[in-house]
Amino acid sequence: MLTGMTGNVPLNELGEFLKKRRAELSPRTVGLADNGGPRRVAGLRREEVAQLASISTDYYTRLEQGRMQASAPVLDTLARVLRLDDDERGYLFQLAGKITTRTRSRGRQKVQPQLQRVLDDLTATPAIVQGRRGDILAWNALAAALVTDFSRVPERHRNYPRIIFTDPAMRTLYADWETSARLGVAQLRMEAAQYPEDPRLIELVGELSLRDKQFAQWWGDHRVAARTVGTKTLSHPVVGELVLDWDTLTANTDPDQHLTVWTAAPGSPTHERLRILASWATDQNLPASPVA
Image (cartoon, rainbow, N blue to C red; front, side, top):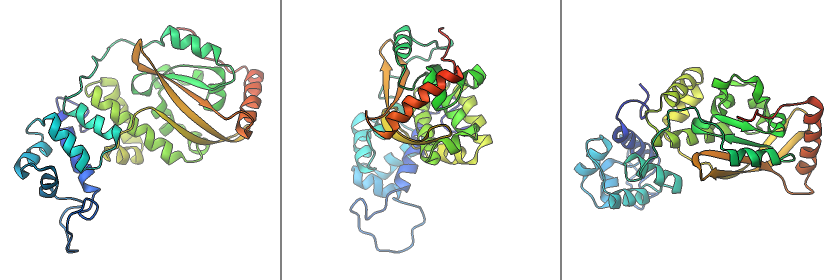
């Protein structure tokens, strides 16, 4: 069984998350006296977290053991004590049931027509549409040239985290593959808080945990991240180094669908190389995704 992915286990997942985060803090970091002696646990003790949060040790212990719910004010205090960032704080509240999660749709997702039209108009910018679990719902020809020919990937396996971990070419395409892979795991972990019983998500996590020790390790770290913005450097086999800014737009008609675009500043070497790559993609007749 994968923690936080099967059965009715959000409280256990919350406890594991709290343990991981307190293990990363030292007394000195949070302003507590440290006598320098040996400590039986990594990071802060439960009683130290409770002291900083002005709650009883028994109350905090019950939270970590999944034996009780926490109020929103207590969660807010714990987020501050454990130095959680915005993504981690949101994840904490989701696990505690203080943010209403969306009802999981059991049907196969199809790209929203509005996103498809945007995608069709993007001829000089690589772009893909991702759905739940990072499933790739649609892409343009330049994205196929940039990352991989998604049309050659079986539809059931057309999932970005899965491609990152199972396609050996990704480890050379991404100049810093580890950072990109860790981010993919953190984004997947964030989604698991919303859909803890999604059978395809459970299957994906189980498969990747068995196939890749790094995935299993990073999944166990309980790091979380939302799909937002960033910069990636790619070592492309056709055009060389590409330093790309990526941005994510969410569809209001289906908040589980995200349009990711890769761009470069006009006049930059990467901008020129993207133009060359677009020409190469045309010559290669690389296909965009078929309209659903």
